[in-house]
Image 1 (tube, rainbow, N blue to C red):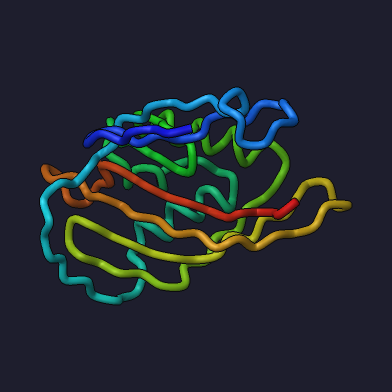
Image 2 (cartoon, rainbow, N blue to C red):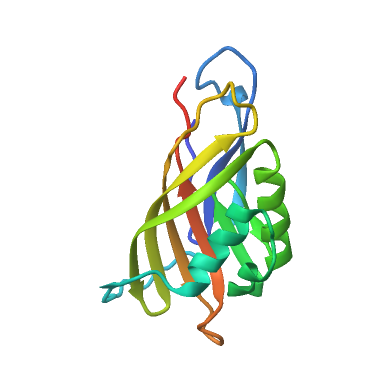
Length: 170
């Protein structure tokens, strides 16, 4: 299957069907996501530093399953593209993360490396995923996240791109 990616769009696999034919067009349904697509080629100077408190507070809300003020780091109309997610608005980001975490595990986030370039923040880390079902194994996938800060309020995240995993091979 061939797809063309146009500026302002990215194609993501939303659902893998149960058909046995690997890579057949029937096995994938694609969804066009509206995302920030930077077309200007610019230089950004990054500084490796300690993670800011807003980032630590955000992960703590998820780790503690409290879902409160740590999400205030997002603009009201922030967008999150975490894996295949396309969530619009701070409340949608919080609600969808809650549904995901409440699906059967506890997550503990560790920020390993943090880089600041003003409007763009980048970090990598590890998330320990502890299943509620203790017969399943704990996994520790790598995570990488890009946070584009709001131009009007640089203390708020406007767009979050993140990836975690894979969490298993099978």
